[in-house]
Length: 246
Image (cartoon, rainbow, N blue to C red):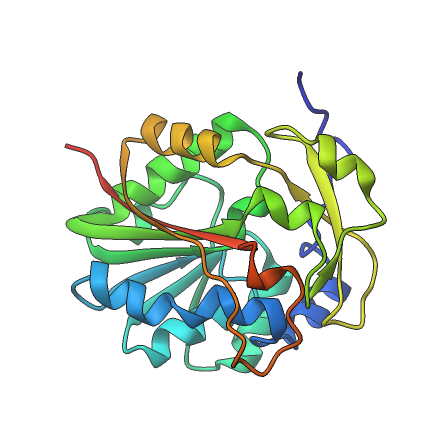
């Protein structure tokens, strides 16, 4: 089945959504996205030069800076980058077009980080082109750390999201549009994402010349100061660590 993306709204491509998202740090379910990243990055990455792909309002870029990385945040949204610069006046934020990253310096980066970005990218071809372009930025020893939503995120209830109003999510296939509502921001309009199975992520990585080194699926712990719902037993996020193929 071919999905029609004519009406797909990248939820962060307008000023209202950008400003709402800019206020968000690491609450509730989002905490699980970032909790284990320092250990994962320390285990798999050597060196400190990084690209933050799809940096948005710079939250993930500032996160890498706190870990000691010399990081450049890149995004296709001027609205998002404007907010990123407000929060981090000395930061390096650059607008890019999909798949065109060679001007940043191929073969010069130890880490390319991508957090939630592929949740908003439709289509096999453009995803493959983007991953191939990001792979080319890596040093021979460099790694891509790619964090995105699990398929289960769209069919369960979470501390930060509700999906109960969207039963059609249960029937989603790779490439379909799925919806949820964020509970941590004032803007409660449904968010549209692109559904992708784990198996098809693996195929994307292979098509882009990447090798999957490790996968992490963080769960919530009972001693954490959040009102977990599904997070105790179902992972909302999946974290892929990738390296260049031979």
